[in-house]
Amino acid sequence: MRIGIVGLGLIGGSLAIDFQRFPEHTLLGVSRRGETCRQAVARGIVDNASQDLGLMTAAEVVFLCTPLGAIEETVNQLIPHLNPNTILTDVGSVKASVVETIAPRWRNFVGGHPMAGTAESGLDAAQADLFVDRPYVLTPINSTPSAALETVASLVQSLQCRLYQCQPDEHDRAVAWISHLPVMVSASLIAACLSEPDAAVLDLAQKLASSGFRDTSRVGGGNPELGAMMAKYNQPALLRALTEYRHQLDRLINQIEQSNWEEIEQRLIETQEGRGGFVE
Image 1 (cartoon, rainbow, N blue to C red):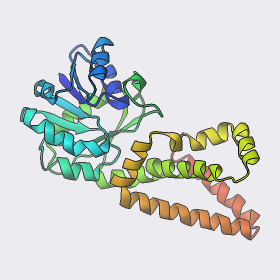
Image 2: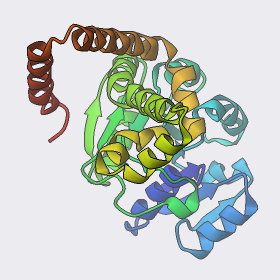
Image 3: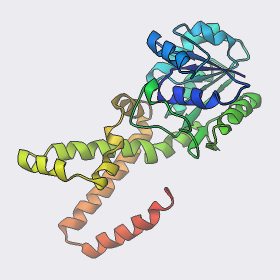
Image 4: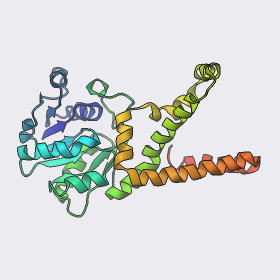
């Protein structure tokens, strides 16, 4: 199959690396930067690459791996080059707004979101097996052709991921809790620590920071553009999640102010038990 990838960064590059393992696939890549195109071909990540979207004319399936804010304009520029039977799918972390924008313009569109990544970005961050045993969500709607869905599902299952399907709005509400809210909470933790007015105390805190701080601050120290796009394109669901989180913080503050240590311990018992439903 001729697979096109628009955007040769972490996700697009990693997809290409894994698909290259299958001799039946030909990988075509598009990047805004000529140097990225040259590197992708030289390293064998794609078979051909160009800054020109016209390269996608030959593609049977195109993965849109651009930032969320660039998807709509990219599709507008891409459509004149596509064969009518070409299947489009994206990798954006928000689905409702993307599906609402693209599906009316391109019938063979399947919304998608691989739940994988690192704090790094760009082609140099691309790696093999990034998607192994990680969730990959597809968000078909009533008008999504079954053949297009089956094709995309077959391709992503070859990555050895855990495939899920749901409605776009369900996806956005779910990832607001377990992906977008953690980014904002983690970023707020870092900002709170940096607000320490005593330079000596701040310096000591930075020296003492270990695994607990590293784990809870990791996603808050990630790609700023990606975090901002989460907030912009998933605003309603994220605001609901942040409001509930603020309610939980207010409740905890009140318990500490009132010295309700038994209530706090019971709360921590409940969260200890509840965590298992989200992570192994």
